Length: 320
Ligand SMILES: Nc1ncnc2c1ncn2[C@@H]1O[C@H](COP(=O)(O)OP(=O)(O)O)[C@@H](O)[C@H]1O
Ligand SMILES: [Mg+2]
Image (cartoon, rainbow, N blue to C red; front, side, top):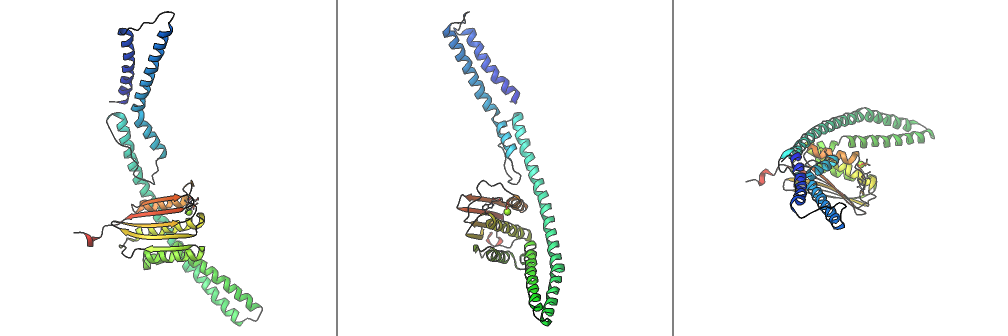
């Protein structure tokens, strides 16, 4: 039944009942009204209003659910849908809304995929230029300084050596930057090596204790999935160092059935009610890119866990 007729029928039933009572039941209203009659009339009105309110609430509940979902829906957490029950325009509205969500989720996934790919391309280009241009020039400077220092007399020699030291540190910084921008190890040696070197560098840089648990039977993943896992791990570690006030961080990579699960757990203060920033939104977008599910769970003062479950094709060796 359409919403219009449902509300009309509700009111018709309530008003009809009241009229029938006035017509056939032994109800009289004197002028001036008697106290008992007034009590009965007010009681009847109250019953009518309550019945009307209850029926309207039931009738309009689906619209309330729709409004709530409309105001809270987040395209980065796909799959939120309303149950499509019954017929009439409310049901049509809900199924139309569900279809719209489906379409928007696809478009969102496609547009963030484009943005992320462009971003990775740009990072690769910057890393390449830093490595080829800045890195080479600094290496040349280093050689010149070394030659000059070898030939110079004190105190100039000490100063040249100091310049050499500073240049060497800057060169290290450039190399670190290049590695962060373009995880070359990932392409050359694979995910586990890349995550191992990422955590090692993280531990030396931040002084946090890092525990690694990587399964040995990890399936081969495509480069895009590996990059998503790597970038999520990178952001989770950065967050643990920057916000968690943690003592140790545990990173694991597990293969169970048809998923590979990356988890980064710290023992810090928990995220609390902090709003998701660009970092966490970025992790969600990357998860969407490969159809993975990202969960961030956090206990106050007991740490935060970032968990990324990536679907992988099931092992052909184990199929019949
Ligand atoms: N491991 C963590 N421990 C405690 N708080 C965290 C952790 N990760 C994220 N947060 C909180 O969530 C917020 C959003 O994180 P994020 O989206 O990465 O943005 P950003 O790191 O740029 O602040 C952070 O500002 C922080 O308050
Ligand atoms: Mg962050």
